[in-house]
Length: 226
Ligand SMILES: NC(=O)c1ccc[n+]([C@@H]2O[C@H](COP(=O)([O-])OP(=O)(O)OC[C@H]3O[C@@H](n4cnc5c(N)ncnc54)[C@H](OP(=O)(O)O)[C@@H]3O)[C@@H](O)[C@H]2O)c1
Image (cartoon, rainbow, N blue to C red):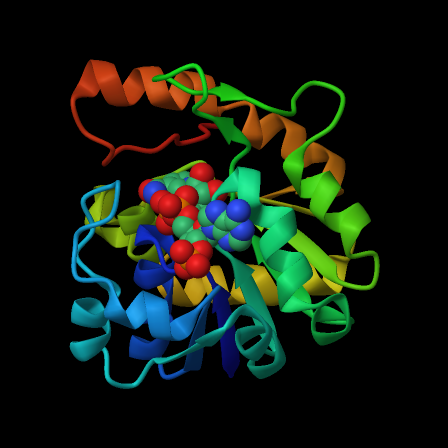
């Protein structure tokens, strides 16, 4: 399958690499491909320059946000939450129309320092904002409740025996996403309902961030026991 990944951070790279490993044709999108390839310093999160990552993932191609959107039969939004709507606007609503748009972003506001707060919550969510901005796309919120390494390879923790949520208005789109998730090793995919249920998973962030502090690692996840 052709997969477009909008975003060059840890999440975009990790999901792009995993999708390529599974045999998908992957294009990663960035605002300015030439500038992204020229970066020689680690980013704010300590990730090595994108060109270094790309050199060891030769099957993945880099393009603009719009080129990644055109390429993908499924498109993954892996941009910083505060820039997500701007990035998807650059990707182009026409290029994303009718497509499954996997949204892994979180509405984190770092303006007050760490831990960040949420810039939308309770009565709305970033997933809903994205669905409203792109009414012709089929937005499925998922994977935002775990660290990038677990998104791509959940089996590295408890053999993958932990939970992954999906939220979205389109059942067929959620089925497509669940199949992709299972192919990555997600064993317990829970359909929460429509995109409004993304309020719940985005609002897990405050406890997720405190757990990371208490445990001293981002390598953990929730398991829903029932
Ligand atoms: N890191 C994790 O483990 C993790 C876990 C769960 C959820 N998430 C969520 O996943 C998303 C991606 O996280 P990340 O750590 O991989 O990367 P990030 O640093 O949050 O985002 C990097 C990407 O966002 C784009 N971007 C940032 N501001 C923009 C703006 N104003 N307009 C257009 N594009 C903009 C960048 O574009 P350029 O390529 O042009 O620089 C880059 O591709 C975030 O929403 C994060 O909250 C992350």
